Length: 222
Image (cartoon, rainbow, N blue to C red):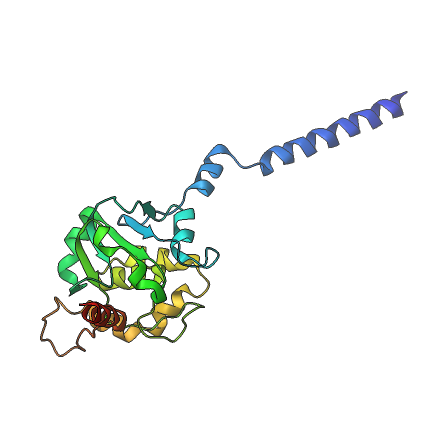
């Protein structure tokens, strides 16, 4: 009897010890809250999506899934800076106060179907062009100016000095930081320009080829 009681007592100790270890291994509510917390951009990011890109490769939609970017309706207005091939001014340090207050948006469309996008219907007061940069995304790697949404956003943010958000946004893509490395010297030079007319010995802000294509098409239509 004594031996049976000792064996039962030992079994209870082992069982209680396992339960205690199990309790310790379970994450607390605080740990779960920390895991669920997602870093947020330092500025509001948004996009107009015209569904022209491959949904599986669309960088803008991926950012939206991570709640890093807000999708806009075509007729929805946006009071911040908008990266658009129909802009007439380049991004510069002068824009920084406006993006901090109102945010930054991008137009998600195919570079081969720009004329199908109703840019005139997009209600924005500050459309901007990006300077000459080389793409690093898997679709247009090595091509000048044909940037993905995430590359366009990262480039503008880096030029404006929004360092924290710069690394957060492309960090969701395997090739994201390759874009920053590929254009490191250019982005550094552009970020040091105070405005588009700055005469400080730095490389000039080159015109985006895609903007020139749109201008040529508009002239031919006229």
